[in-house]
Every structure is written in C-alpha cells, then in structure tokens.
Image (cartoon, rainbow, N blue to C red):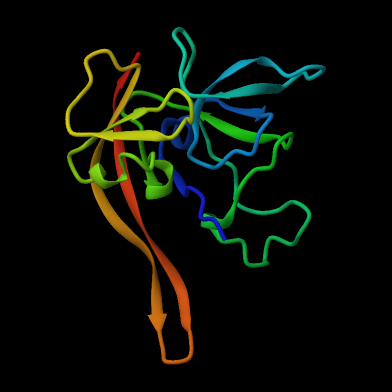
Length: 181
C-alpha cells in the first residue's frame, strides 16, 4: 500500500481571505500537495482548467488541495489522508499560492532524493517535473517559488499492543512562502 502526500492549507490566503480556488483536471493520477500551474480551460469546459505539475514563467503557482474522500462512497468510511489519490480525469480543486502563505506537508510531498534534508530552517522549491517540493540547505536566488520550513510536528498517534498496532501518525512540515515570482 503506497502512502501519498498529506497537505494542510489552514493558514493560506485562499482559506481565510477569499483568494481563488479553481477546479482542475489532470491526465494522470495526482496527489494532494502537488504544486503546478493552470494551462487554460480543459477541452469543452467552462470552469475546469488543465493542471500541469511543476512551474512555468509567467504562470500563477497553484497547489492541489482536494477534500479527502471518495465521492462513490460514504464520507464516514475510513478515508486515510495518506492513502488518498485523485484518479486521472477526475476534477479536483487547486488553491492559488500567495506570498506569506503557510501550509503543512508530509514527507511524501518532498522528492525522495531530498527528504533527508527536510528539517526546520531548510528551504523548499518546486521540482519542475514532479510538482513535489525539493528540500535544500540554502535559499535559491532565481527561484519562482520558495518556502522555509518553520517547524515540524507529529500528527496523529499510534498505539502498539502485542496483538495489533492501532492508529497512525506522520510528521508534518509547516512552511511559509518566502519567495513568489
């Protein structure tokens, strides 16, 4: 069973100050917390845009933040955030990223090659091909998007007994957008 990115948007402008939230669609499976941009309206659509992972000059940065439930099932069923993925062709929502936005993301939203660098005070930029974040030791002078990890915290809890392990926990990295071109 694969684990997917968990993303929290509690302290973003789109949550508190009516910044835009768009409907989008992708041609491949997408995880929450994937960064990208909108590339025009989807074919035959009036309000659903084409989502592209990564970043592009002159394009507004957006992040996938879809409520975690399967529309075909009851919302009360066990819908673990780290087991959730948006299937290709399924409309989802994206939030416009603004300067000084704060968000939280699980380690799965950081490229596997740089996960070991993710820690308080480190910097995050967008990987242009995967839309995941790249952790680094220093700020990048020409970054279109950069965030600084402010703190990390554990979300959830686990209870281990002789018979079973109950619950689950994950480390969430809280970051603040410090550069947005």
